[in-house]
Image 1 (cartoon, one colour):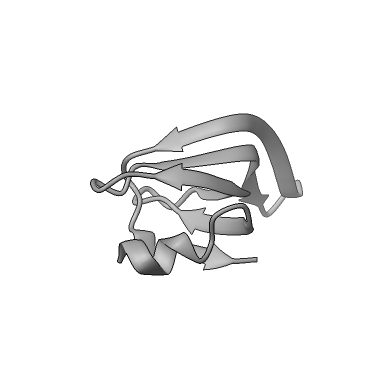
Image 2: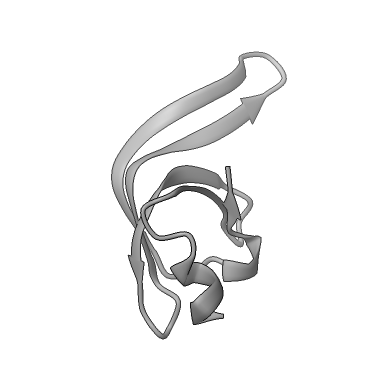
Length: 73
């Protein structure tokens, strides 16, 4: 698993959290517990009335996502 994530360091990635949030940012690091650190990140919020909204997050640290859901954008 760690070897797979190594290939995404300093690249733009998209993660989907367990609660369904979609976060996009530059992967800067992770640890053995698969906590991830994204920089210059934003969340995409989909709405039937407002379309797609992007919420600026900046530095984002997450310990509750499935690393297999991480995808290079």
